[in-house]
Image 1 (tube, one colour):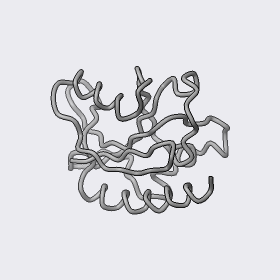
Image 2 (tube, rainbow, N blue to C red):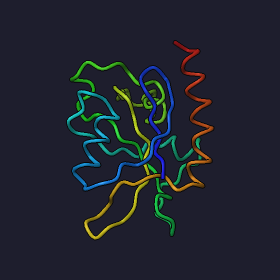
Image 3 (cartoon, helix red, strand yellow):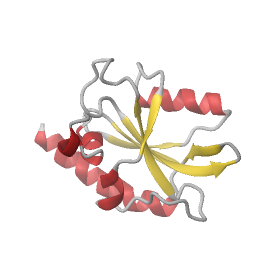
Image 4 (tube, one colour):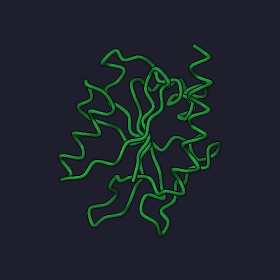
Length: 142
């Protein structure tokens, strides 16, 4: 199952969700977010659901619910703003900017609570083309 990475340069790419222990997965996710990322934050950005068709509800399928991971300390690391992440997060309404690369991931329930996973195929096929168009618009904006 895949996840979506959107860089501060408005480049979009798909990656397989990492395998291994929770610690190993977390390390790879942090590396995808950026070289300075030591702690990522779990965000459920409103526009991902209202404008792009992402699901914020757990369904029967693994990864049917999606969310965004960002560098918790992106602003302190002096990273470039992420226009797409900031748009999804509704920065224009509240001023809280998303800095650094972002990941769109799937979620699943486990005995420990919410775990991250790849995005369900149906969700991925709906989101990726729409987010690709948004990244193209963002590239032309800069």
